[in-house]
Length: 271
Image (cartoon, rainbow, N blue to C red; front, side, top):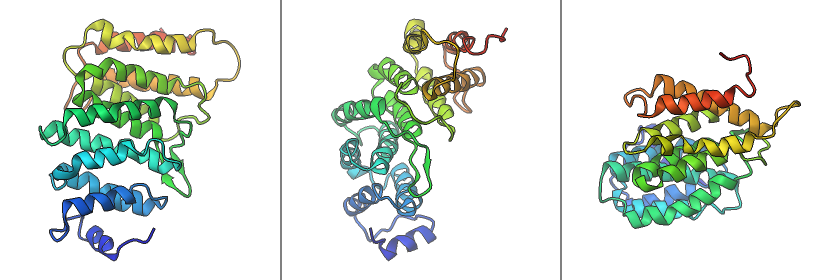
C-alpha cells in the first residue's frame, strides 16, 4: 500500500483534522489503512488518526459506515485486518454512547454477532509479530466487549460469558505475553460496573471457567490454563483496587472471592 504524502503531513501536524477532506473520503481511507500489513500505516497513522477524530466528532456522519466496514472484516484472510476491526468498533461504539444518535442501535445489533463469533473462535492470539507489529486479538476484542456492554446493556451477561470463553479457549497456542490478561480484566470490570446486574448475573459467567478447569491434574500447564489463571489474578486485582475514576463494581467482592476460589486450584498454598 502506498502512503499518501498528505498522511505524513497530517501526522507531523499532530493529527489535526484536515478541513479540505470530507468525512466520507477520510473514513474510506482510514478503513483501508486499518487493514494494512504495514504497522506504521495501520497503527501509527490510521489508528492514531481514527481514535482522535472519532472522539472529537469529526467522523460522526460516517460512524455507521466505519462500523459496517469493521464488522465485515472479522472473516478477513489476514490477521491484522481481523484484529484491528474490534479496536475500531470499540471507538465507534464509545463515541455512539457519548454522543447519542450518532450510531443507530440497529447497526450495533448488526455488528454484535460477527464480533462475538470471531472473538470466541480466533485462532491467532499473538500479541505482537515482528513484521506485522501489534495484533492483539485478545486485548482488542476485550476493548470491544466493554464498548458493546455500554451500547447493548441487555448483552452484558452474554459478554461476560464471551470473555470467559475467550480466556479458556482450549485450542490456544500462545500464552498471554503482552498484558492481554489485564485488558480482559479491565473489560470484565467495566462490564460489571454497569448498574442493574444481580449477584447471580455478575458471577454466573465464572461457571464457564469452572467447567473448563474441571478434571485438571498434575503435569505441564497448557497455554489456555495459564491464560485463564493469569486473567483471574488480574481480575482479582482490578476488582480489589477498582478502576481509576470508575471505582469498584457493585458485586466486585463476590466476583473476586469466586475468582480467588478458582485460583486455589493451582495455588493451593493461598489462605
